[in-house]
Length: 499
Image (cartoon, rainbow, N blue to C red):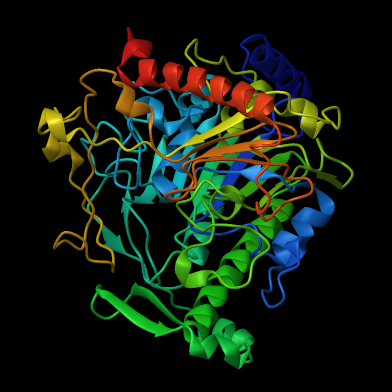
């Protein structure tokens, strides 16, 4: 009788369109992991000479390794990109400290509507996490959250479901994973598929690490001692200069601690019987910052539209859906996450302009080329001729509450802003920008004075050989395509998608 009742309940769940978690490969559980300022080269599986990342290496060896995976040049824009599937300039999240707009529809909204439990853990940075904020994780589709307005170090201060900030003692990546595992245990007992986002505070500066992790890197080459880099002081919150060797020891220790926490999560999924049908997707949010940049095969750094600013580690592990290891060189980007997850979950995609594509054919081994271009654009956003712009959200609602080490504007917290855009003008289309096709990458004003550059990345990963003069037809085609896309983005920025 009990078996009959169980079968009837399963049938009713399917008829209702919300299948239970279990081991149904058509509706996987989903966990998104993201490192903060973690560049493409900073993993063992991409050949780093010093870093130890055994668990990310295992994921890359057993799942789908995305060698050409991209993010936006800086963090808040990438996080908005993941949540919405839309370029951040469409809703005014131009730079760090810019919030989302309340009207945006996120992947958490869509998967929750499709029957998923939704939870967020860690860095948020697209609005305050406090109660009452119209862009906190709850307003953006998450049922539960333990989050920070910005980044955090050891002993982080986090807000649970928008409540008063509370200090947690220990290594921050492990704290997030322990909390997430508790959440997953509850959701398994409830029988609901889950969508869980874990955004680490590591390896963003200022750096710190556990002694066992620091000890792994005490033998870094002495040559890095002669280079001084600028970063935040853990003691004062102000900028200081330190020998890069000391800084790298701490940075690499943070990456290894984050990697170990990912290993702990993978083991927990196995223990809970959830690993086979859980899609685990890791990526960085932008390229390597100046304090962590050493010798590199790539050009640029965090904040640039060259490869070192936007190419990040990307790997997907999902035993039921990706049973054999593969490496892909198909271009993919963080805006692809929303349409891909919606396709897997059977969730409806909003009828507004998206900038990502469904990568399910790539997961299935059926995609060898992307076809669609990927665009990048660091919007200047300043309109000095118009005076102070009209805030999109009440400034009181944009004030953060969770403290952090780095002092900015006299504060040890972070406030946010988002502004109405008054009108579209020619100057709005300026700023560093790039378009990446299957074969070529066009960069405009990537650095001051660089003008128009065209690169064939398959033979020029370092973006050293400018082919613009040799291929004016390709420059013209990609320039037009980029400008047309910018026009669509500007229409979105004016709020026309919400009408």
